[in-house]
Image (cartoon, rainbow, N blue to C red; front, top):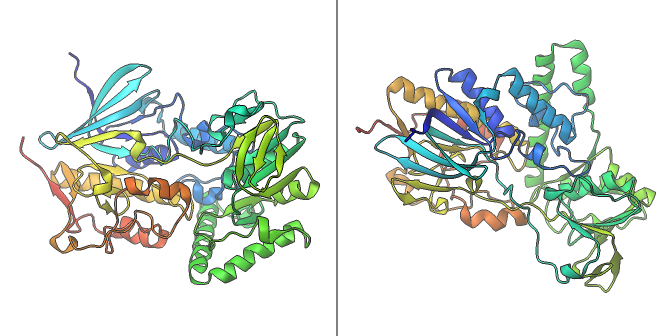
Length: 489
């Protein structure tokens, strides 16, 4: 029987986090062997999976882009194909192709303390494949690639038209001259509606409750000017610093003075839609700004679609689907040829895999998060999870660098295991949700499955870039909590 192929590090996922992790390993741990196991036939993750009209970033690319690779496109709010091209270019420039194993859907990971080894099982187009590694780096994102979240709607089977979820968008969907109803009010719905409105007869956004929106130009004027006078990397670094500061300032202001931020956001909507539009009903949420993510409207495109009459917003709930559309709880009926259920993602823990340590199944809900990247009593395992209140990549970059520090420390000290352990003084920590102060439905659905955080470092998932620079980037890896050992075989 052939022995499993062994690597020092296995990265699960070749999306934006996985490609970044591979770069950091190549740069900072050149003596470590590694491979990326990707479940899909191509790299890119989110940016390869989603194909719906208008797919784009809802963060600026100077912060969603990598710290090590400048974003040079004139548009800072980029479309999906441009982001995918950026990821492909990153992989090609760093010769990552030979390291990526496509169509490897990882299903199981088993840790042996005696061998200091993870044994990882993947399904490769119906055939099992096994790999071993000393360190497992999960970069598989936070939602299911199998299916999106779709609530049960009464009468769904009665609808004579087509029902589509954005995560499973048909390439041949014809909506030209059709009446379209998009159920949802998140970033996906806000993107779809102006993208479809030009060709559809009419597009209706049906929302149960409003979401905060903010209109911004899709070009960063300062970034484009800086590139004319400064070296590319310097211009990118300055723009990135500017945008990180701005993101943080808005978020902190929304926590300390939510009423002021709310009024600023609503004034922007009134300016975009005019004095006669019912902003109170359709664009004034019941929660404070940044209790959920803000929706970005590049160049005010959603407002333009509404003002032109090609799109409209209805705030109501679904009573039942009918043969010709949707009947609402108010009794109003919306005619539709196509219904798009932009109802969100199905969140999962660590790539929908099963884990065990020395034969014992791991229940991550019973663990404590270590710096928002590792788990109490689980050796040699890190997962990359970005920010929900800022650009994802800001944090995945920090995590990639931190993993390299852990690996280099183990190599230097001759240890083979790094395991977060609670100190005696930590056992009285009050448990808090893995993500605090963010009551979005898609997060609440999965929160009971995620690890807890405590009330002291390093048992925190701060979701704060400034704090994470200290916690992940500057703090010593020997912190009295991360235990470094070399068990005898």
